[in-house]
Length: 115
Length: 114
Image (tube, rainbow over all chains, first blue to last red; front, top):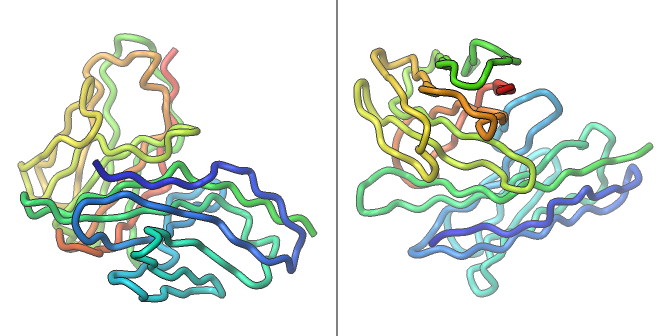
């Protein structure tokens, strides 16, 4: 079956530090890949996505590159801010024969950025 | 702006009660979803609906049912609540059913079953 692997954390960084959150996946077919972010007290919102190999998704200073050869979609940011403190979910979607997108989420990685 | 609204932020119920969680979206989306979110397990799909009066089981449908009488509203029903259904419940919607479609989430309902 399909699965997404990421560390749960928490990951604690000082402001302006470099961030990497690793994400690897297992999927049948050719998935689309996503990062969603959940700020405290809120639902998830899409941060970025990539739909084919070597695509780079980017938003708000965050980037992730779809690496088919290593089945990975690691999230990076060059300089984190306190306002980036949140839970980050890696996810994949596939289109089974039934025709409805099926999304599988990782367990979420909590990021804490301290001033 | 896009909006998915869940009727309650916090809910406390007793074991055996019938519980209704309501979700409304204002974007004319075809697809609606119910997930539960638990620490260490991430999000798990309970049910989804791709059209009015249509529903499909997700990965963990046991103990739950759903209703979609109108396009904008998707209800999750716990027929007889149990303590292992204490969780954060998230509703989501998407415009189309195709690959790569973005999901829009509500803020969640934290349900405690005592």
